[in-house]
Amino acid sequence: MVSFKVKQEFLDQNKVNIANFIKDFKQQDTSKFQYHVFCKQDGLTFVHHSIYQDENTQKMS
Image 1: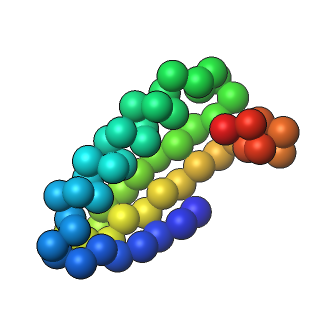
Image 2 (image 1 turned 90 degrees about the horizontal axis):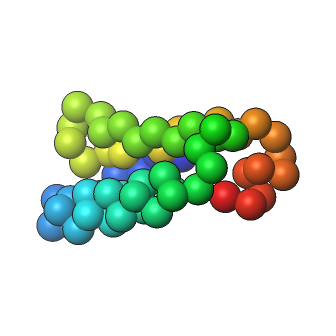
Image 3 (image 1 turned 90 degrees about the vertical axis):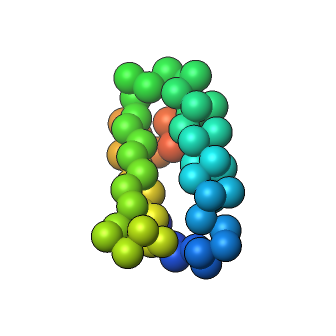
């Protein structure tokens, strides 16, 4: 799990970057992993959570 906080002026670009990342990630075989992004109530803190079937799957993602 990774969390980070962005400055207000980078919020919109960060959302675009996340959307592009998720779009690319979903083109892989998603039966072997889960990836979720959450935004905390402050609207600036993002939490990325991933679960992989095994270490090899994580290295390939």
